[in-house]
Each structure stands twice: as C-alpha cells, then as structure tokens.
Length: 175
Ligand SMILES: Nc1ncnc2c1ncn2[C@@H]1O[C@H](COP(=O)(O)OP(=O)(O)OP(=O)(O)O)[C@@H](O)[C@H]1O
Ligand SMILES: [Mg+2]
Image (cartoon, rainbow, N blue to C red; front, top):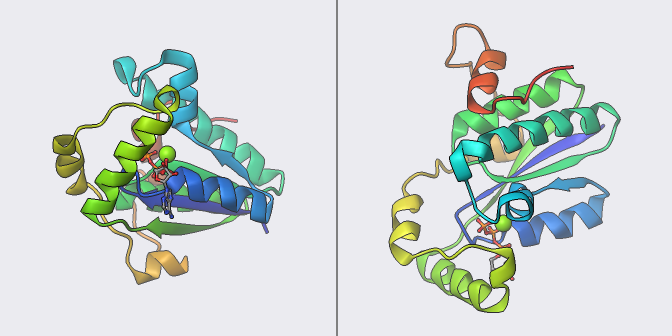
C-alpha cells in the first residue's frame, strides 16, 4: 500500500538529507518545496507564494499516492493539525500516513545551518541565530501515537478537513 511519509523537524534538522535517503531506500517520490521556491523565485516565500506552491505539491502527492507510489513530503510541517490533515488526505486516496521526526539540539542545529550555508549557499537561504531561536517554539513535536501512525484528530473546522486544507494550502484540492 502506498504510504505518505511526513518528515518533520526544525530548520537544519536534516529533513532533506533524510528524505533523499528514504526516497532511494523505499522507492518513493520526494517533494521538497525549498527546491522549487529556490528555482522559481530565489526566495523562501515571496508574496505568500509558498503556500500555493505547497498546495500544488500536496495535490501532486495525492495523484502519486493514488497511482500506488509512496510520497515523502519534506515540508517542515511544524503544526499537528497540518500533519493530521495530510494523514486524512492520504486516507482519501487509499494510502496510509506516518510521521518521521528528526530531533536536533540547538547547538547542533546552529552548527549544521552554518556549515550548510558555507558549503552550498546556492541551494539555501541565510538564517540568523535569532530566527532559529524564535522558530524553535513553533514546532509541535509529534507524540508516540503520531510516530506510530495511529494518531487521528478531529478537524478543527466543523466542515471537516477538506475546507481546512483548502485554506491552509490554496490549490491543494481538486480532481
Ligand atoms: N544526521 C546528520 N548528521 C550530520 N549532519 C547532517 C545530518 N543530517 C543533515 N546534516 C547536515 O546538516 C545540514 C542541514 O541538513 P538538511 O539540509 O538536510 O536539513 P533540513 O532539515 O532539510 O533543513 P531546512 O529546514 O532548512 O530545509 C546539511 O549541511 C546536512 O549535510
Ligand atoms: Mg530541507
């Protein structure tokens, strides 16, 4: 059965590195928005376009899952609701979903981000220590149930997950 794998972690935790390894190990398609944003705009989020691009990638992920191939979403996915919504979406196309969390301590994180900037400035953006500090509080860490793939949440929106997804990632849904 096709599987949707949500790679979660702080900036510089090693998500893309892990997603590349995993894609090759299990024969899955990897979708990494940063690579698209860099190629299209050379910036991380001009005019809120990132949410639209991620939406199209979510839409693409659903098509791939429906065809029977697993997908790795390398989106960051700091919000628990975001992950629950995507797990629900996977179910609608006959796939399972699980979260893979990469933890990284603050010191290692700074060192990795700095080393990456030195090694490959063309494929990344400069990030300050103040930003790393601020962003650390935004990630809702997955719990054991989520990591085991058994976490299912009720949608915060009375209309269900579909309108929630359509608001969070414009253009994610459709035929
Ligand atoms: N397990 C690891 N051990 C040591 N270094 C690592 C490990 N995983 C990744 N790195 C290095 O850390 C840096 C950040 O890794 P990577 O780009 O994969 O992180 P990321 O989580 O995708 O970051 P971002 O949130 O910015 O997309 C890279 O230079 C990478 O080579
Ligand atoms: Mg990355």
